[in-house]
Length: 200
Image 1 (cartoon, helix red, strand yellow):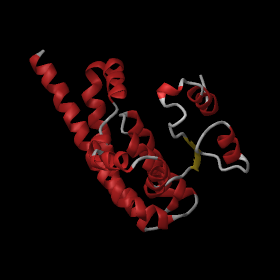
Image 2 (cartoon, helix red, strand yellow):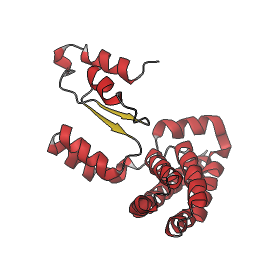
Image 3 (cartoon, one colour):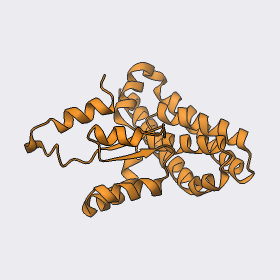
Image 4 (cartoon, helix red, strand yellow):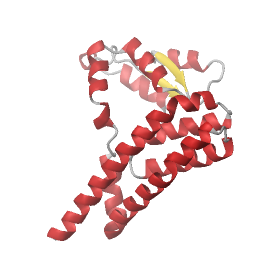
């Protein structure tokens, strides 16, 4: 497996016809150690961002490196980007078989029962409860291919560790929107699976 530095080197070595020299590469890392940024830039990357990163910070960074037309296309396609990862869904179908709809129902029950509890934990400045629920949402969301929800849940978990409830509050609305959209995507998968069984 290649790490980000090796991948960047390979991309930069591609023929110019592939626009390899023009493709922006931004490092996204959990570490914020001194010297990391210089190492990334020396490897051929264009910029560096350390986690946790808010959606606002990400948008700002992307706007510095990508054309306006691309940013606008991302904005208009945001809702579709919250759909479940097709590869994850297909893998779940293969590994769970007839239990696939039941697994999705279990996810939806978890989400419906706990999303407002997580929001209350933020409002109540309850770091332990926020950390516990955010950690659970992170794992469960990724399990069903809801990666955006998993990432925002991870951010909330880190804010809980830092007792940073002010930043957590900024993510509440986005978290709830993602929960709803993922629940709708899960419902669609359950309906499709049920229809397939019915038509056999």
